[in-house]
Image (cartoon, rainbow, N blue to C red; front, top):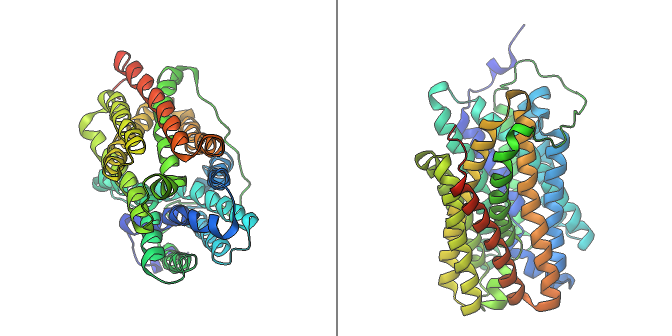
Amino acid sequence: MIDRNARRPRLGYPVAAAIFAIGMLGTTLPTPLYGLYRQELGFSELIVTVVFAVYAVGVIAVLLLAGNYSDVVGRRPVLLVALGLSAASALCFLFEGGLAVLFVGRLLSGFAAGLFSGAATATVLDLARPDQKVRAGLAATAANMGGLGCGPLLAGLLAQYAPSPLSLPFIVDLGLVAVAAVLTWLLPEPVEHPRWPAPLSPQGVRVPPEVRGVFAPSALAVFAGFALLGLFTAVAPSFVAETLDVHNLAVSGAIVFSVFLASTVGQSLMGRVGVRRALPGGSFVLVVGLALVGASLAAESLPLLVVGAILAGLGQGLAFRAGITAVGGAAPPAHRAGTISAFFVVAYVGISLPVVGVGALTVALGLRTAGLTFTGCVLVLALCAGVYLSRRPVPES
């Protein structure tokens, strides 16, 4: 029998990481454009946060229903489906026909991100040689967070300095998705005996009793960190425009990019710091960053917001990677995948639910007061997690 992979160019994990980054880039592309959609369609800040939360609902649904599907049917088919969903989402925004279409676009984007989270990460690691595993892990981290950060940066630059601000970013995204689809087709299939089609086997959410002592405080720290990411991804451009009176979309996109870039750096530093110190330390750095973000809103200071965003992103990255490492290490092998999926579910609830609360508070109290209330609540959560993890540190391995 002829090996179909033998006829394909041998592409390594950097190509898989590039595909991962392109896929995640599309999920945050609308971030600096929500203000333009508000002007065009006439909806409130609350609706912006609900549109964003629909994305997280899509991610959670896929994590629960098909988080391990690529283990069965193969990596390439799942990546191609994810890219197809990403393209469909971009088309919804490109031919935007009202609020309902935006909801559909964000839901499709969430489905794509959920598939990418598992399948693309596994592909990057699968295609790395044993001596490349550490670098491949960092590449997967950089592709995930870097792609999420590049979406707002790219959209902000194009919307500010190029024509057709609500069309060109998605045309560029469709071109990148097409390139990624070709590269995916050329990738070797790491799964030895894929079965296609295959029935879904929903994993559900289950945390074994022996993991709960590590899971609960780690999840609290990660919930706080992802709530921060949700704030910046959903409503930071509105804060920048309405509270700080900065209306340059490229600046808004760059601020969101800085949060994700700092998160990537924080995750890369976790190996040097160690899990026991990174979990509480990341929580405390997150607290400092949140305090500066709150101070920037009170003082209407853009430099304070940028510094706060970078510090908060750094703390989030440290705590996030340490939390996954701690929970994965504490979980029994037979339940490790399900436990980590449950951890991601907590993270994506954190990225969506509190932000909807910000939108609701904005209607009642105004954007500035809502932002200050939000940062105060998340700061308290992060502080509680940091204090608890300092007094009862998790095992190093």
